[in-house]
Length: 326
Image 1 (cartoon, rainbow, N blue to C red):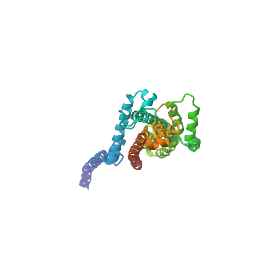
Image 2 (cartoon, rainbow, N blue to C red; image 1 turned 90 degrees about the vertical axis):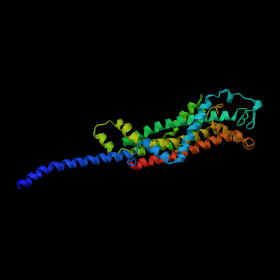
Image 3 (cartoon, helix red, strand yellow; image 1 turned 60 degrees about the horizontal axis):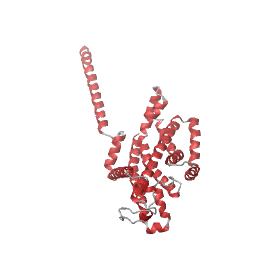
Image 4 (cartoon, rainbow, N blue to C red; image 1 turned 180 degrees about the vertical axis):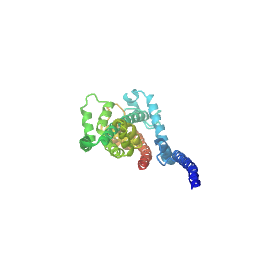
């Protein structure tokens, strides 16, 4: 009996040490697997890299979109305002490849290529700043209302519901006609002020899910402040969704600005826009006999829309995968 007790006392430490070593080995193996296997919860950068590597169409669309944007903005720098303001009667309606005009001229003798570059720059600039403003307002509103909830959330969301049913296009047109000193920044402010409501609903819905997760409860228990939890813990988990939403929103804002300019309520007179160039097609003679005046602007809009949609679908898949993995 004494021998058995002595044997147990000697073997117990050895068994405990062996179990500890085994646990450590398993922990190291799990850490290695997490580092190697991104399917557990990949970082946003790795998830984007993997998706664009797998989707060759999205990769090509992203490269082409960047190149086209660089060409437009760099070329527009060297175009003087006189090129699209001054009227040249003797140069009007020149056909493409005539007298040095690669894409021809319009009814004012303005070079269509230069007009398209400046118009695209203006339309893309407006769409970019509107998208940024809408994302900032919508993300902050959605995060705060979704996290705190309660009566504030109920009252605020009833206001959002009311604003979403209003005819935004008609309100923009009315405001444009009422503002005395109207310019590009006025248009950006008006569109942004009326366009962030749907983004609030989207971000709020996702924030409601994140606010009930264990990491938020643990942060609250440890005494972390509410705004630290919102912007340091919940917000990063919404980054993929926000990026995916921003691309599709950008395409929509390009279309909105183009529509307003086409109707005559976009940029001020004398400022080129893709919509103002498309407006030439309202003249039956110009539409049929002089297509070079409006077709280039239509091609730019179509190409940008297709490229952004392809990229947006890839980003949407990344956001869905990260949401499924939690």
